[in-house]
Image (cartoon, rainbow, N blue to C red; front, side):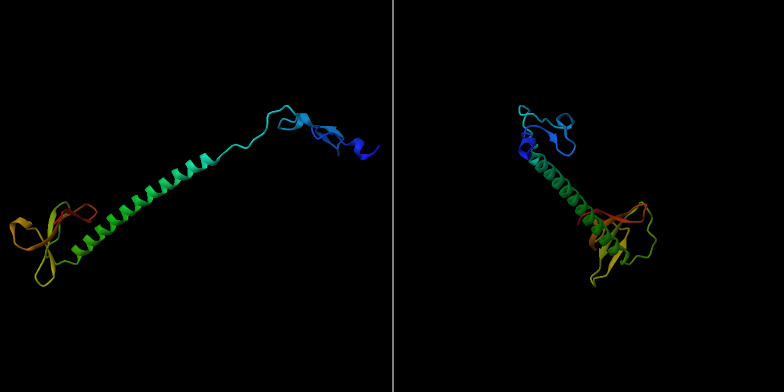
Length: 138
């Protein structure tokens, strides 16, 4: 018998090495009338997922940026107050007022800005972590 006689048609699933028919063993349809196997279009899903991830990352970035700016502002206030002159020990939970003298030197006081004519820089509250928080914008 020649090779052409032994060759099965393309629509017949035949394993030449084992000399067995394997159509029933395949995980997909093998006959001519079976539905066409098409790849699922995942492009729309990918685009939606990419947009969601980009939005989430951008939102997180903006939150972290705002938190960083707030922390740096708090650091600047604390640095400004700790470099100012004061002759008393501030009490946690109290509000103090920062002023600037004519010579550029800053000082901390318990006197409120509306009770004096000093050049006020702001009012600050000493919280329980001993961190100064700005309370009044001037």
